[in-house]
Length: 335
Ligand SMILES: [Zn+2]
Image (tube, rainbow, N blue to C red):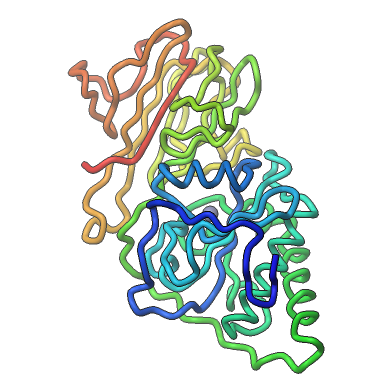
């Protein structure tokens, strides 16, 4: 890694899933992400080549850094077009999933990269919400997990340490005032993220749309055993029916560490799922729906739902036919 000139250890330009240029906008900050998984540079490259999302840099668990979108181009990372246009997105590999923590090597390398970028682009000394932003500042998401939770101070302190060190003791540039958060149209929506906890294996790797971040190659979440909890991240709500209690309350949060409010389920097998996507800015994106389907233990996928409509013509407003659900897949689609 050439920190002075911000040349990554590996440069692998994505074939698609970013926008060339920045529509005339200047880089004014860095957006910090976590992968919600432990992906390598290779893993990010293959995921971002087809997931409809991307970031400029990926920091893998050992601290090695890959660049996949040029700084001068716009990555599809923040679920907020203004943020995509004006910030550089850095993804960090996780070393834990409950909660989503980042290990020492990745944290240090990521912070060093943020410092190098702040210096290179004259953004000033790294400071949360001034020139360094957690993804969840820009859109409804749990990203970047503990990097903006229990590791928030450690992370920004490390950014400052490297920034000061790189500046060679020269006085820091004047602090910039925080850019006013301007609500702006999204033209790209985040793919749906979701996770299931199964009877056989506990929480499985996170899905992003139809891509398994665990690298299984499956286009659904599930391992063949009954699903006991479902956690989903998208604007809107989701709800499950269980053998134990029937329909449970709607959930809008995504936190696999919080079985009460961060996911749906009660520990007994799920037998039905209902989801509704709330389009945030229809003028910019057109109306969107969540398209989702479930399969029962030993069975194939039932006809997909689009929000509360069954495309199979059954007339019910949920996915499932009463059997124990063992797989689910979901993606965002045009209404
Ligand atoms: Zn993110």
